[in-house]
Image 1 (cartoon, helix red, strand yellow):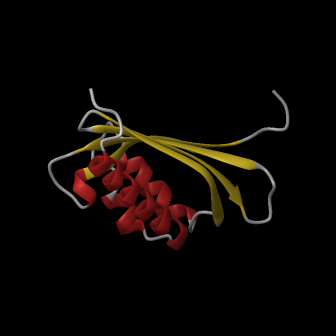
Image 2 (cartoon, rainbow, N blue to C red; image 1 turned 90 degrees about the vertical axis):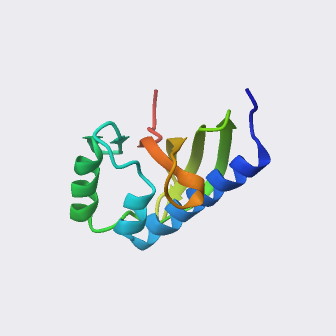
Length: 130
């Protein structure tokens, strides 16, 4: 298995960056286009647990946008020709708490950015103790 094929890594990175722009702009159609449209797509957030794309869509419609943030360290890795992970640290405006985001990406036959779509995502904030 080839890890970090340069072409695939560039595709996933472009998709990740597009998602971040959409998130900061509250561009719901763009975010939806980058998540796999299936009941098996899940997102666990800071305060929510969402099973399936319909729950994710309903959450996005009702939240009124994501808190603005700046990314810290980002690590994107491709495995073979159809799977990738993206892990990022972020810092919300007005807070010194570090957030963490993990995404699993799968390459499908259709869509922008080479067909890459999020199939699982997890967002959390670092706590003050263990």
